Length: 396
Image 1 (cartoon, rainbow, N blue to C red):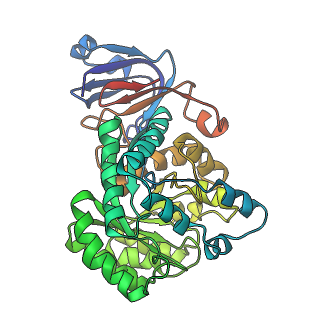
Image 2 (image 1 turned 90 degrees about the horizontal axis):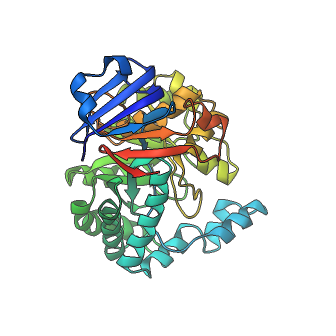
């Protein structure tokens, strides 16, 4: 944590009530924002801090990636090619691929290899402006590997400047050749108690081919008893009731939601559940995207995330996700950026992230562009000039 004065900001996106500011400045003191607004209003004491001159560039809050699977071994590039040739996700899974293939590779990997791989991905994310990331387990499906994955996820925050929120996802799918009831009991009675000390949240894949709402309710209830925040993969492959379950349980987030309905949206809004959308996954899978416009217009809090994983969307870039939020989901540039910053922070229940206002974390990104609109306007272009984490320039 450090002091820093960012001056020469052409356009400052605060995500605070004052909105965007032209000719702005941000003062960070002790790692926290002490001032964010017009440069003309900067307190005189702030001029004593070390200076980063943005040179007329735009400044935005650091990205908060609220849904990833960064810890894994191996890759499934060949499966990606097979899908492009016409195989479906379910066909790949039935042939021994999909999640089960990554499970086998991850079980065979050491802690050191898992931690190193995840940290390498996190560093690339950091270079793209991500300053806080959620990391799930779920490629172990046994107690020892799930624990190893969560330890590796925690190690990411020790090896990189990124802040990490960890989520236990032992109920990803039923382990191959396992009895369904016995596996579910193992998740609740064995895996969860071992993993809870290493996790902040508990997730479950409530969808076709994974777990039913009743099974998911049991897992999330046990997770809550262990002190873990409930999250849920919902309505990705089919409409199965996961969104309504998220609302019933007051989950922090319902993620994916490609098959969500207006009724689901109303329930999520009333329960205060954040809709975490992953446009890179539907894009990669050639599937219909989540109904972001419907969810946003219904008053649901929307977040955007990479869902970085080795099978259905190996995307590490939040700037690309912002672009897809506009080009695939139909959000405006301002909405897409808000969802990738403040929306992600609310999904992770981190009130001090995703905005630039007094007391917020001193995490920001200086874009090599005049405005935030260049993110969707120029997808795939390296537009991150500097990344600041807690008042320290950590990338760029």
